[in-house]
Length: 70
Image (cartoon, rainbow, N blue to C red; front, side, top):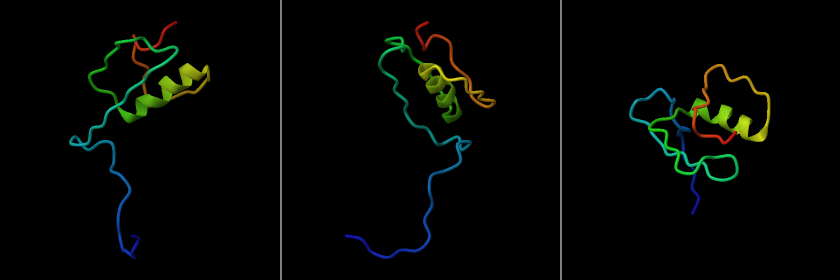
């Protein structure tokens, strides 16, 4: 059932210390069993870019070593 509403928000800033989520990567190019204890949302773009073979400078994100097969 849909009803009219006012206000609302869309997500939160990723600098909130209480905000965590999961990230699972599986498939060709990913090392099986690799674990990163904590990964920021800004670190997803470098990972996806490398898997796709794209040149994509990510000034805020890092590509964690040990995730991608060479």
